[in-house]
Image (tube, rainbow, N blue to C red; front, top):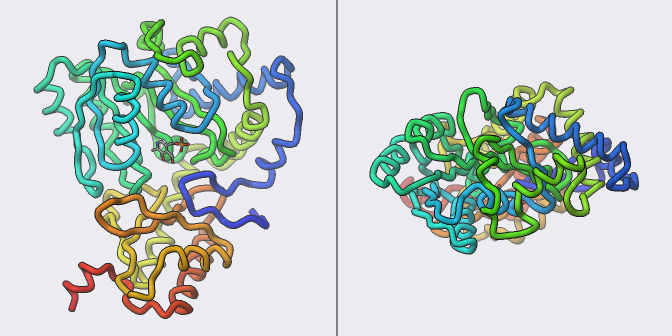
Length: 379
Ligand SMILES: Cc1ncc(COP(=O)(O)O)c(C=O)c1O
């Protein structure tokens, strides 16, 4: 795990292993048999992670995660569809924005950024509006790190016989999503998150019975997952120029993922990372934005200290000089910063990160670590 690069404590791009980086040092032609075999193996392995079996198809897509989210929404939601968009952070808002741009009717189910969407809320919304055809949910809302109760929500959506779209960008591979237990039309994620590869491609696991109905739905040529699927089935090749080095890196990262115990192994490492991080930060006096009960082991959000000596940019630069990259907060109401716990890192790196943060707190002379409101309440 040694590297000259900083340890990336962000939601992606992430720290990758040397083997994953090295897998990119090849030139593959898109028609090379080695590349065709690699693509086929990737499709099978990604589908297997959610136990998709023959009932599901995995469709690969070039681009960052949002490309795949937009592709799946545009493909799965018919032009006369109506989506219940569950929002408790930025990525939920992004889904609403996509629906607006691609002109899919949608209704927003909003909760606070520190409140999970509950199955009951979804149940009530679906019972109240028979015109809703689909529900979208962000599994781990990366703007805070909150975990939404996917299994319960999926059960309610299935009960109402509506389609379910899951943005599992920051949970896929680390938190269980099992197609044998939950029913979804589409689950979307990308290469550069919990699978610990480089960014550059995404993928959707789609329920075939739903996908088969999607011909002509999509607003876009390049983002049409139905066409992408059909073209792959015919040719065993990507429809347009494939991101060959990204595919090679993901194939290598998936080998490591399997060797490390799949979802169970990865989830266990991230839970330990997250625990070490939260214990260490709380010991220093930082206050977490979320209670542990709704915290996903992916990224943590911390209130900015009330101390006037705190300045995020200075704090960030100094921690970066010590070899760790933090992430700014994404909340509008309160000032926060984020520290991720995913990537090819373990407990040792998390302890080193906490030590670096402790040293910088001391160096900057920050003594009041509680946020302004909590500092006032304690006084
Ligand atoms: C939950 C979620 N959805 C969507 C995205 C968008 O992915 P990208 O920035 O790769 O387009 C992210 C990125 O972190 C995410 O965490």
